[in-house]
Amino acid sequence: MRRSICPTHVGPVKRTVLARTFAICLIARVRHTSVLLALAILSPAIATAGAADRAAVAGSPPAAWSPLRALAPAHGLRIGTAVAYPELLDDDAYRSVLRREFDIATPENAMKWDTIHPRPHRYHFADADRIVGTARRNHMQVRGHTLVWHAQNPPWLAKALTSRRRAIKILRAHIRRVVRHYGRDVAQWDVVNEPFEPASGALRDSPWLRAIGPDYIELAFRFAHRAAPHAKLYLNEFGLDEAPAKLDGLLALVADLRARGVPIDGVGFQSHGVCLPSCRDTFAGLATALQRTADLGVAVALTELDVLIPSPSTPTGLDDQATAYARAIDACLAVSRCRTVVMWGVTDRYSRSGVGYAEAHAFDADYRPKPAYWALHDRLL
Image (tube, rainbow, N blue to C red; front, side):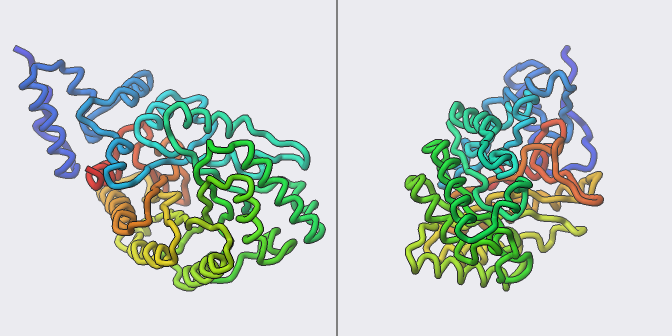
């Protein structure tokens, strides 16, 4: 007689996860499937995989487990993630989860100035080309990130912005070269990234603002549209649901740009959450901020969604994180012009972190779905 693999006790996990576990066990018994198959699809609360097995498990989910990218279109959504070049190159499990779960890829750093334009007359496209090629082969859209930003610029740039005329020439040349290089492979561009001060509606004191003036934003959008008239062009910003003055400043800017015929198609809400210490208020104002922006006639998107929690995590922390992820996607689903959700990373193995905070993603360090993943999954069922 075959010994049962179904657990009689599973520590402090959510009831929904426990229910999944017993349902899988029941299916395995009724259909006389192998113990290995049942183990391969057990919930993250009890499934384990060694380093050698992670890629196989991550790359071959059971048919009953519909990935996020298969569920999202029923809601008019595309769901994606930031893609890091070194991990894409070196980690089989990373590639497997990326292909399985997501249909949008945002190069995390490979299209930023310091990587793609390291010297005045030299462009380095290889890292971003690899990401774009992976996306093309796996029927994923690409969000280009980013054409203009105050950070991650090469050392030569600040020295070169010696006059308004020269700065405009450099900006135009960079945008034209990068955007034309990728052509129709990029469906959306973050044209201008984080142009506002962190907590106010004032424009940030950036190299571009100092060299060109406030119209650097308008110029960037016009240059991008000329180079890629097919692409949707976004202004990307953080904290819009937390800082009323910042949101007001953004709304005023977008309204002004549209009134003057500047080709801005959307606003990206970065949506980096932090549970300090709980997630009770995380993304509480997101739906309202999304709707107010969409009311201007532009698309809105969640472009860098993640939620930092105290690390090492606890069951309570993981549940709080799942609640925050659910609140974020609920906010998008409530706004008709929100059609893109991009998470800022795949796995806690490569999570961004703060002092005492990490584990920001929907998959843990061993690529097992966390409660945050199931919160997204259940909202899309």
